[in-house]
Length: 421
Image 1 (cartoon, rainbow, N blue to C red):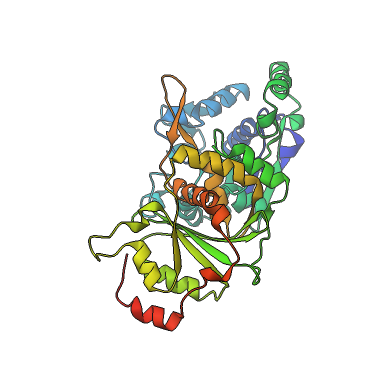
Image 2: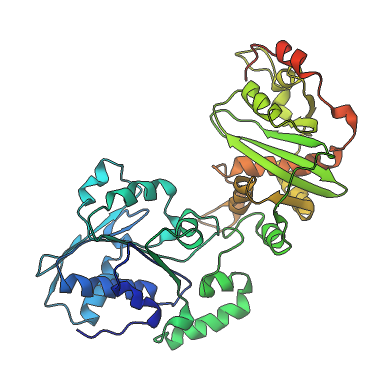
């Protein structure tokens, strides 16, 4: 059977473990992947799984796209389209499922699959990949992935485009690679370049965005990337290292190590964890043997814990740290201050990767009826964003003077014995 294919997608017919296409709108990558799977399934009996991160119903899947391509290829005589699956006369089976609902045990039923197509791969989580990939183990089995990248740090983009595995073909496919790019989309593309230049490169050219759509610090992060302020920020032993805490227990504890040089704020490391006591963090910090300045706690650092009768401030002071309390400021005032301060911030790309991620993903809740933005979301990204805000609020009080130096560590450790938070 003869079928038209863009040159960029010809690799779909050459055996490889991973076949990945990423790019912008109008590239024809999903159309091509669907067509290639149907042709291969018509040539030999295959078990094909079409999946994505979340599939609440068959309408969320590529079922309709495959059905349309069956008709376009004239394969209606061969494929039987059912409500939840597609069957070929030679025994080929095409099924549909969401990855998020599966566990290592429940996904074992797919061990005999020949082809997996993961659509909308940009939102697939690390957990899902770690469950899926070892399951697809049949000799000659292949994993196909299509996606429009969002952030460079997204799991799928890092896993396949930045650090591709062995036996992988990874291509970028855009509208310019599609010989059948329709005139209607060409008009839309040109209009987008005029009215939405900020998102044009992401929508149409498949480039990663500096931050998620609607991110509070979208412009600030974009400028930091353009100016090369997310790079290598090494420790300078001649400058004090200030420790900024966003306290948490069940929620994440976010801690940043910051050095100030003139007007620059160099964030050399960020630590995020949960269910660890303050004495644990204190011990881990002291192991770094840095030129310590002050510890900054949020305003609730003065509050006494009912279990210990001690506040976080008292505990950290007992362990030898010079402790300061972050001024109590509204979240909105703190966000405004962070925006003003962002241009002075330098981030270590490796050691502050999580903090940068939080800045890229910190956004507001949107009222579904009015479309108006509300308060920032409290989610997994908000703890790092809170920490970033505390850095900005305390920036002017960070000095390189010696009065912030710690007390002798041996005596401090003895004084702090038994204190927990």
